[in-house]
Image (cartoon, rainbow, N blue to C red; front, side, top):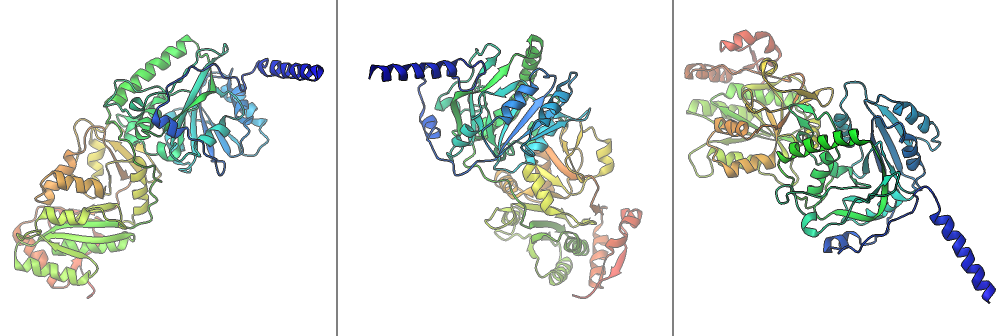
Length: 559
C-alpha cells in the first residue's frame, strides 16, 4: 500500500515539474489577489455553454517588429480553435517585418487562416482598420493587437468564445504580462460605478489590457467623425481610439477575464515614449468629442431594404413641382411615401396644385393654412415622425431641384447608418465646394465622399438631403419651424464643427432657383394650365436661359 501511495506521489511530482518547468508561457497564471466582485461582474461571469464557435477576426497593426512577428503568428496558428482568421496589417516598416511575416504565413497549412496585408505608401492605417471592421460580419468577434503582443496559450480563443456564450457580454478584456521577464502584471477588475462611467462622469476611465475583444457590430457604432481630424483620418492608431467609445457604449456589458491571455514584448524606451505621446494626443482629441451614451441593446447594423420617404416643399410653383415629382418617379425607384407641403397665395396657384395632385394620385398633398394643425411645423412633424414599418430616413427636397440621374437610395441609407454622418447631401454646389476652405475630402466608396465641417460652419446653402427621421423629429420638438427657410437655417445651424456630411462625387441633380416675381410665377402657373411641363432632358443645356427665368417647356401627356 505504501509503495502504491509513494509511486503515485512520485508520478504527481514528475508531472508537476514538467508542467511548471516549461520555459514558454502556456497555462501559467500568476497569483491573483482577491478582488471584490461587483454585481455586474458576477452577472457577466455567469457560465454559459456556447452552442457553437463564433467567428473570430484577429487584426494585427504591425510596424518594425521583425523580432516578434514569427512568434506572434505561431501563437495564433497554435490556437485550438477552428473558426478564426488573422489579418496582419504591416505598414511603414523599415526592417524585415513584412518578409518574416510572409515566411511565417507560408507555414500555415490550414487554408485561408492568415492574410498578410501591406499598406501602400501614403495609405492610412486608421482608415484601413476602419474599412476592415465595417467589412466584417456584424456577429464576428474582433481582436486588434499590435505587432508586439502574442497570445499566452493555445486556448485563448476558446475561453473568449465561452465568455460570449453569455448574451450580456459585448466586450472583454483580460490580464497581461510583459516579456521577456514575465512580470509587470497589468489589468484588473473594476467597480460597477467605474464600469458604467464615461468621459462626462469620470476624470479617468480604466485602461483596457490583454485580450480586448468586441463584437464587430459594437465597433461599427463608432462615428466616422471620431476617426478623422480636420477632414483626414488620424495619422497614428492608438487602441483607445476604439476602446474608449466602445467602453462607453458597452456600459455594464464589458467582461473582465481574470486569466493572463496576452504577453507584451518590450518595445524599447524611445518607442514606448513615442506611443505615450500619441496616446496623450488621442485622449485630448477624444476629450473634445461628445461622450457616447450606453446602448440599451446591441442591434444589427441597418440593412437598407426599405424605401426612402420624400418630403417636397413648394410655394406658388405648381409647374416646378410637377417636374420635381416627375424626376423623383424616374430616378428614385425606391421612393416610399411622398408628401408635398405647399403654400398657395391665391386661388389660381391653388388650382394649379390641384392639377398636379390629380396627375400624381399616390402623393400626399398637405396645404399650409391658418387652421389648427395646418401650420408648417405641424405638417412637417406629421411627415418626419418615425413610425414602425416605415423608412427611418426622409429625403428633403424643394420644387426647384430635379433629379437627373438614378440614385441608389439604399446605398445612401447604408452609408449614413455606417458612418453615423449628419446627412447625405444629394446636391451640392461643386464650384463653391472646390473654392471652400474645407479641410479635406475623404473617399468612402467609388461614388461617394465624406467631408467635415470646419469652424466656419456649413459653407454653402442647403439643397437636397437625406436625413434620419429621428433627428428631424427632435428638431421640430425643440424649435419653432414656421417655414422651409427657417428649417434650412436650423439644419445648417445644427451642423457643428467636426460634423461629417456625405455626398456623391458627381452631382445627380440640377437646380433652377432664380428669383421670380409674382408676375413670372403667374406666367408659369398658366403654362401648367395649358398642358406644358419643364423639359428635364434639356435642362443642363439651357442653364443660361434658366438663370434669366426662362425654362424649356414641352407638352405633357394627359394623365
